[in-house]
Length: 299
Image (cartoon, rainbow, N blue to C red; front, side, top):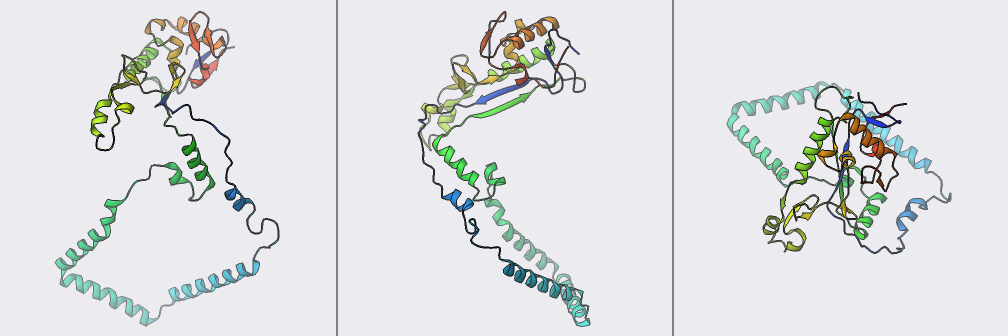
């Protein structure tokens, strides 16, 4: 377990978290004061009986309850009735079915298969619902109206993506802030940043729908390196991304010995947010706790 001075944090457990914001939102949407239709709220808060003018329909509820109890008693009595005629009818019905199947086994099998295919044909036309709002929120809920209203007036295709780094060996708990672990994370980070998406191929594949040259043409990477188009959402000129690697300026040369790693994190932790960290010459846009899990501080 690594130690650090001056009450500095070190990471245990799940380890550093990489936080990305993919895609770009359409900034510049003009915000205006909008008078919301209050009918949905009126129907919920001031519906019939909300003012105390009507009472609970106790009589109607008791009548319905009595009907349900009577029907349940009748069904239960019929189920418990073991008259000889009932048992004989059931036995004769099953005997007839068995005799029919035994007499024409092939015909019954073919007809059963055709019926199965006919009843299952609708499975090929089903569509999976991917919108969690439609899967888990009751139909007609006021939250769905709010969600649709927000998407209509402030559309965005920004989506956060999180990655969690843990030590490859050992149980959960070893310090992940070692040179080997940080270099491994940096290597994975650089490989992801080097991924290139051929936007021209997307344009070609979608030409029958519309011309998307302006939206998707050219080559794309996450941060726009190598003169490509950037996929990431922007915080000013930089991509909206938080990672423990930012403390080291995404440079392997800054990942030194354990003491040097701790010293660098101490300086970052002591600096104020939204400032340039003295001695590191990097901009601090987040706190250490934002990108590390299981932090323990020394006394």
